[in-house]
Image (cartoon, rainbow, N blue to C red; front, side):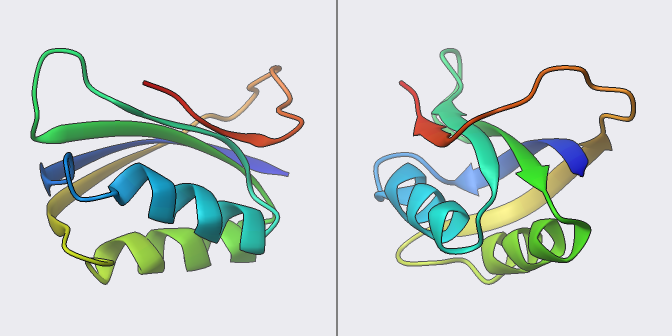
Length: 93
């Protein structure tokens, strides 16, 4: 089980980005959440937890600029030793 914290920069709010991320995460059996940054319309935060290969597929999906999004940069932080276990994938505000 791998857990990563992700920050996405670009045109990622107001384009149904979180909906697409949630759908892909559910398709890949990735747990965690995605939420808008409350201080910037150009940032979305996410935590992904699951099999390493599925996390990589999730990150590749994000890099492909799904829908009308324009992801300019992705920062990924490995959360080794993360004790929190997610049961599903949530789309938060």
